Image 1 (cartoon, rainbow, N blue to C red):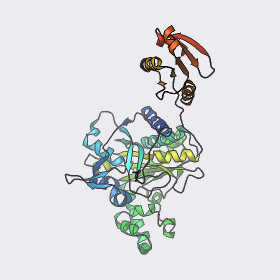
Image 2: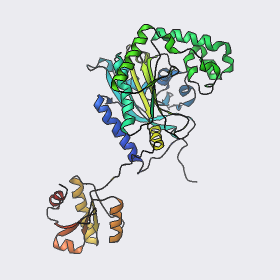
Image 3: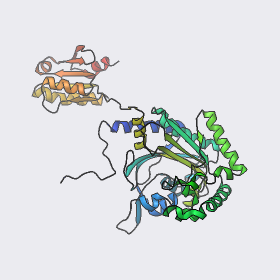
Image 4: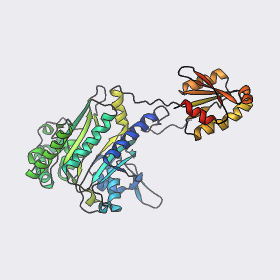
Length: 423
């Protein structure tokens, strides 16, 4: 029986991987513009990191993590998201002491969650995210949101919906928390088991429940915006002012939450409104977390960030009919006829590559016609034809495939002469 790929994973093959490379390069170019530097953290961490950083009341920690004991008895987990690892590294490596503040970081790599595979959702998936640590300025909130929007728009997505909300400061959240407990308590037995557990420990998470989303108490639950104190209102107004100044359209959704205690102030999501994209429309989520660094053992440091799935981005591109396939062409294909010519073509091929050209030759001992077809399939700009006569005369025929124009070039200083064709 043949061994097959594990459920919830995928092979990204040539022809498709180029799309990933384009997305990754787009992300890196945008990050360079905004002065975000790449950070690379381990693929597995101590399980406690995610229990603290993601929250032990979340579905991710309770149901979805790939957790195991290593041979030394240490309890480890394949990372289910990127923020916890970045914040751990920030605290452990004392990046809060860097001269340049805030510290702006981005990451790009595989994450792992045991959940039901579906379109655009895998058990191993790739996440791109950024974190800005060290500033309480509402302008950095707007900057983070603008990076996420620019990422999608740069790749051609148009049917986007940015949703923003404020969770307020600690005082505002405590007041809202009490109102939620009072609201849900009388009928909490009508909700799922998870919601019943969250009522006292983390009632904000009830608002994020998918099972009970249509319950009538969800529709008239207390809005966090009604509990914002003056300072929180001013902060949110500033974020909205900056987004307006940047020309970024958004809608306010008071039901948008971030369920962990250290999240505060700005929360946002970007959705796809493309027809046929699917029931789960969220592409990206982010928010401010002003207590997470402290929770990881560092000093009290404000932070904000977002994360997006590359797989869901690709699904959104497909839904909008956007093809980002990049045609990979080569500069030269060497067509060799005869044993001596094939031997010589190995040397000439290497000279072309060392000169910076993308070049290829036949390795299948095909006839001349088949070699020309191979050159066309590869999108070669030129072919170089070498046979016994060419070796004797020291000249080769160079053919430009676009229009069929042919030239004879001397094999003596061939690279210099070939360079002249490409000026």
